[in-house]
Image 1 (tube, rainbow, N blue to C red):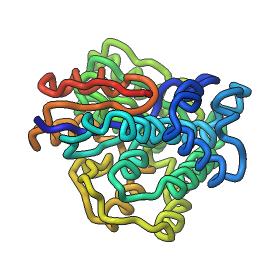
Image 2: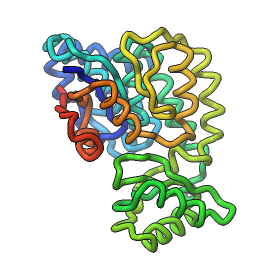
Image 3: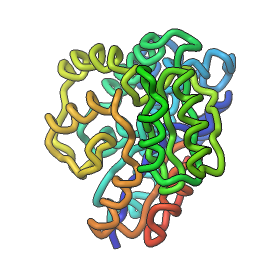
Length: 301
């Protein structure tokens, strides 16, 4: 049996996230305390007490989810190390790729939490409010979604951002182009086109300014070769080398999240179990739609 550690890029982002874990687990508490020290402000208090509107700012949400995920991982490693014995790969969806790098020993947690704080800020700054949008396209093959985006662009940016499952692809770009592409997808037979309540159009060409701001920060950060291969978002392939892991995090800012191909690659590598570590269970549902042979459990502490 071969296990993949899976880390979400989204999850329960409401006030109180991680509080019970912090109170019950010394290992998890150390992670939250390390985040507070690395960022120079009490992220833990923001997670536990709010205010909600401040927690939902992407510059805060991203380090909050990373911290919760790594805290759950450290709690699991301290309390139930036997559950990690057959871990052969790590993978994370979007932001979760940072958590995967930490769990694989490639990136120190204090560096990771500082990086994702800036990642959130740079992504928010890349596109003025209201200019960009994202939408989930349900019930249409990814190739058809891609064709609809090209058809609807009309000189603006719109493209697949997250290949989440064979029947769900998220698109991102200029708001008007996303609206046109959504209509084009419906005309091609999509069951639904659902506008998403996001603060910026992630993983598309409009994020190129954020990518260029992240590049020097990542290049200045120490990475180590990973203990476990990390299946990257941009390449959908397992990477151990420090330089390759760093480059993948640069590329993922404005590249689509190739989650379908990533899960398929894990299956080809012999993975038959997944452990989703962190808030929520989004990845378990996606994996079930991609590879039924991989059974996913959750662990949030």
